[in-house]
Structures are given as structure tokens and as C-alpha cells.
Image (cartoon, rainbow, N blue to C red; front, side, top):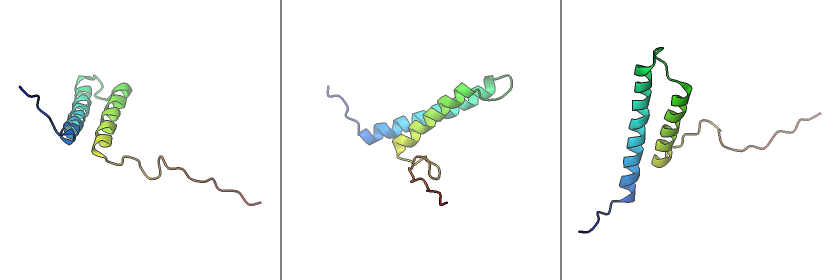
Length: 78
């Protein structure tokens, strides 16, 4: 019986969709389970990592404004 060969792009999109769903579910579970109805800092970090994974798989540019770019420093004139 031959093994199924999946297209790599299909697997990437599936992984991106699953990581997005996990991030959303974690957020709602954290809100529902917490006594104060807030999201703990550790959970926020995990959610952010899942969302960054989703963005990087889908090729979304998640850098805001000039974050991550290098600029030359200005020289002061006296």
C-alpha cells in the first residue's frame, strides 16, 4: 500500500490553521479558568508564539513600522 504524499503547502497551511486555533482556544480557556478573568503573562507569551508561528508560516510580515530594520545613526552638529 503506497504512502500518501501530501503537498508541502497543504501541510504548512494546516499547521498554520492549527496553531491559530490553539492560540485562540488557549486565550479563551485562560479567561474562563482564571478567577480574575484575565490572561496570565506566561499564557500570553505562549499565545504570542503560536501567532508568530502562524504569521511566519503564512508569510505575513508581522513587523510593525520599522521594527527589525537597521538605520544609520545621526551625527550631531556642533
